[in-house]
Image 1 (tube, rainbow, N blue to C red):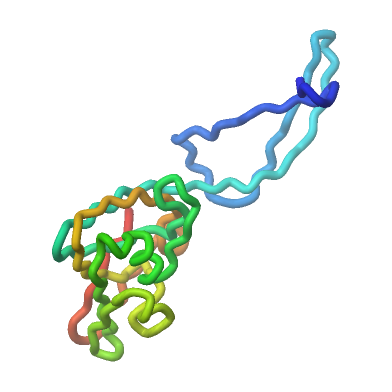
Image 2: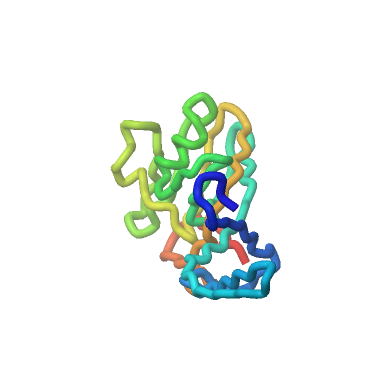
Length: 171
């Protein structure tokens, strides 16, 4: 019972990690029963959000990486990683020199060099098939949390004629 309101109770519910239900609005039936056997019930809607956790280890010097999630948290911090620039910021300027991507359609390599590259062609959105080359001052491990990229549990790798730099989606 609440310490400030008589007759108000709260409870916590933990969804099992073996849950296989899809994301989305779910109806939860709540039944309250007192010691005398009186009961009442109500239905509450909740937005179920399943997520995946992934530790991304990036080596010092040159690394080939891929972000397989629509990232919603980095470590304990709620933080979206939507672009190469967001990843650069999460890695920290003390750790990363630059990040290289391949624009297969234009047939060019692009280097994200820091804030001067924000919002440019060198700052593409992280996608389910985007591979990255990192040039690091120090090794870094990021603990990422989010939804697997793709649609309806499926991701596609779109190859262009010529050289491609791709990442492999989560299964």
